[in-house]
Image 1 (cartoon, helix red, strand yellow):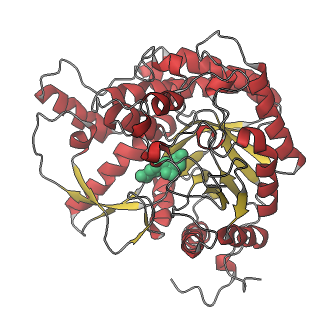
Image 2 (spheres, rainbow, N blue to C red):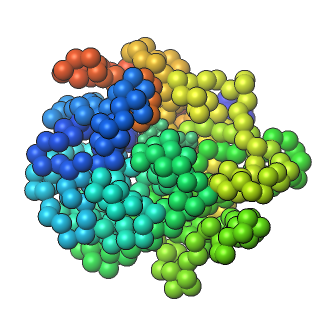
Amino acid sequence: LDKSNSTSKNKFPDYFKFGAATASYQVEGAWNEDGKGENIWDHITHTNPTYVENEDNGDVACDSYHKYKEDVAMLKDLGVDYYRFSLSWSRILPYGVAGSPVNKLGIEYYRNLTQELLDNGIEPMVTLFHWDTPEPLQELGGWPNPEMEEHYAYYARTVFEQLGDLVKIWLTFNEPKQTCLEGYGKGVKAPAFTTTGMADYKCTHTLIKSHAKAYHIYDEEFKSKQGGRVGMVIDTVWFEPASGSEKDAEAAERAIQFTYGWYGNPIILENYPQVMIDRIDERSKQQGFAQSRLPKFSEEEVNYIKGTYDFVALNMYTANYAEWKEETDISDVGYDSDLNVHLFMDDSWEESASSWLRVVPWGLRKTVNWLSKTYNNPEIFITENGVSDRGGIDDPQRINFYREYLSNLVDAIVEDGVNVTRYTAWSLMDNFEWGSGYSEKFGLYSVDFSSPERTRTKKASADYYSQVISTRCLVDSCE
Ligand code: PNW
């Protein structure tokens, strides 16, 4: 695309907002302070330390529990409009379960952080759940147990009551696909179960119902007085057909339906994607299951779930090629064989420190266009986008990443008419990158994890992002 003759094409609209994100377990530390209960990441890192690279854990992390004022000062310096952070369920409800006592000190921490943001003119955007399930709930079976809906509803109501006067944007779940598929299906996230093709589907079923319930609780009990909005963060990579063939196009569409659509369709449209229902029903039957491995929503549930969003939220980092493949072994029970698409990356795509993440900026433009078309032009928030390296203050690769992805985003908005209103950089600072520990760095600020002070230092990319935010523009020449 030739943008040389139009400067305004590089400009984000005036209403557009920029933010930065973190998540509780990845930054807070203070894992057992002030009455916080144990969660599944505390549990797995303490009982099975080699689960994470270098035996890292989030016991201290960035120590944001004590250093939140420094974090807010960094956000202020960046000039962001809002800060996306998550609440630790175990810090608020140490026992996790419905009806259990609220930890006043936990609430106080989040009220202090939120007030500090507001005092600095930064809007809070709050995720209720970013993967850190309370351990007592995991011991009741965790997300595949339908009972979780009741526990989550109690937690959500508690949070709306305690923080709803200050917070106007709520995200019920972060990337539930990672919780369900990676946590219960593939074992690469806590609680590390590997019952794919069953537990991941049950987890999703309960989680979607939990989301819908929280949405309705807010809508009925809080919205009229608090005036906020509620949505769910769903992630996907962009799936590009491996060739121009019909079959590869079908494979790519099936892959995004099994990824974004798995969660997006029930909430934004109606029920699971038909291609998931058909394939999993059929494969289950051939495998001798008396019913489908994909649970069914009743008609009443379908109607209760549909429409439970005030905006559509997307985490997006990278892309895969999708290639059609022959049906292979019917006896294999699992999400991957239910999907049955050959996914791969192009060797020419620039690498990052994360094996799953290659730099594919045009994927963002295609993804938001797909969302807009599939879900009838909703308001879209980008709730995460960013890149990892191995560290250092001078980070030209990250500057280039942000420049290229933002350039594609502005094209999607200005040229394609997609209604994206927010962009969130992952992450404000280097933090605990789950199974990779502290080895992969996504921050705009570096954190010295070898120092008890957890000293934060601004990277070159933070200056770049600041400049984009203050000018709403990607190039110096635009206005
Ligand atoms: C996100 N993918 O996870 C999480 O929300 C963050 O907590 C995490 O730190 C960040 O990305 C970086 O990993 C994702 O393959 C992991 O598409 C993988 C994918 C997407 C999101």
